[in-house]
Image (cartoon, rainbow, N blue to C red; front, side, top):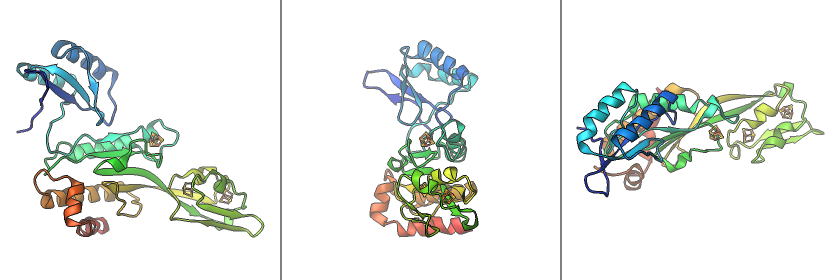
Length: 271
Ligand code: SF4
Ligand code: SF4
Ligand code: SF4
């Protein structure tokens, strides 16, 4: 059975964690959190690193009443333990000018697919909308980053150099006199700034996803959500089947290496 109460250092008190939908709570939910903290806790809440709301100083006898209150006010209590944890997300295209992907939407879908899934140990997952990486996806077991792959159309280029000037990593080289344009794909961090800067339709960008496992970049840019979900599903299957009880993903990689894992996920990727 799933556990919901985390024991506090103060005898007889517990905390519960409320989910946010990828970092978002409605005004009505915030009012309900206010009531919850006032009536069942100590009148305050804490924000966790997983974008959850922790309500401390709860008594075990109040858990059922709290569950009923939460159900009536569209608040979800996070289960504890060795599970797929709440997916964290930045605002992405919902409001950030740098956003490439809709991070909260993606996080909510991952939450729907895997939220609370029992695993040998916890899996953390974060979605960040662009290479600025505000969500520090490399510090999670699974990280997803919005990315743009620039495509060049030589017939439209006037060699103005605007794309090269906005590229923060110096991946583009333009020589007007020689009518020369080139991109170093190794240097490119897929931010899409060059695509936005080109006013001559000489660059277009296909939006995609970079996926990281414990900060490791095993796969090329993924172009569709369905493939991304397949890879994550197979990664979780592999973890369930190969990790020892209480073993974290990075420790499993240290013990088994990553080749078999990559091949297993890649098989799904190519289907
Ligand atoms: S990662 Fe990018 S899209 Fe997300 S908040 Fe930061 S700058 Fe905006
Ligand atoms: S900004 Fe566009 S037109 Fe100008 S050099 Fe770059 S690709 Fe060519
Ligand atoms: S996508 Fe970003 S990093 Fe890549 S070439 Fe364009 S501006 Fe540079």
